[in-house]
Length: 385
Ligand code: PLP
Image (spheres, rainbow, N blue to C red):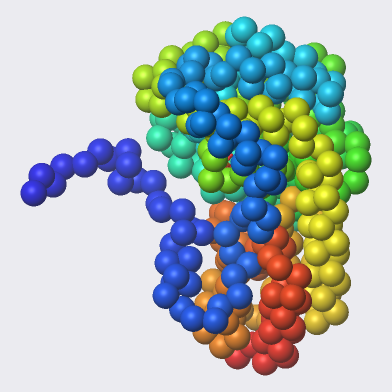
């Protein structure tokens, strides 16, 4: 057996979410609030479009940038919802989920030792992908600033090596969005220090109240923003693997180089389905958003009722209860809750050490099960020892 592997890959940890869920896999009668996926199946009109594409024999590679029809649909979707316009010829790239886009971006902008400011806790993929691209992660703790990035703290972390700031709103794992005034202050910093802003807006369509502001829409920001979005969450399409980036053409052309060698294109049937979803999906998305909103409110109330202080999320699929009053660490809480009451939640530390004291609960769970899980958590909190 050859026993030589890349040092780079051996240095990065496996996803904390997956590690915890290996425990869940074999357990019976568990209610899982774990993996961050919509509990809806993809709406039928979207599935039908993929079936038609297959029936018509549209089964070949597409353009490396993505199917023209899909890029057109993305351009009008982004223009319609976020009032930013992008050129379909060279400013939009269709990727295998937002996950691939994140990888392409860091590999395209970072040289060895370049720093990326990452507000933490944060979704799990950024840190390892920055490290794999040779960059250095500079965490910016948000746990003591209401889970919103503090522009003054970001300013204090900027050095000559800083290349980019990563934003994600509504946020995974906390559910918090970022106010327009904070976004503007971050924009000023980006302009002053000539930084990229990687804005992961995958939950934008699931912000509960209207008024989502895309970072690219702020004055002077389009030229330095990489807007990331996709259909996994908004259109209940996690398994289809369709995401996209909208960015200046100089960056898209570099990401395209890697994408064309490493992925070629996204599955063609998925792209036909995604085009249909973006063109005609608004009412389906509204229905799903309303349902998540209702469930997030009920779950937040149930957590606050039992003394686990929980902020009502601004959007997305998660609540992030503060479990510190139980005296347990996040991992102890999640492990004991799983063994004693058969509810799976993700320890906050899966999203960085700043997530200690919290657990992530996915509210995209059938209402009956969600409320049953809430009751079990309430019983657990009474006697967590
Ligand atoms: N970004 C955030 C904030 C996420 O929560 C997720 C998935 O959970 C992703 C990106 C990856 O999504 P995709 O399915 O588009 O790769």
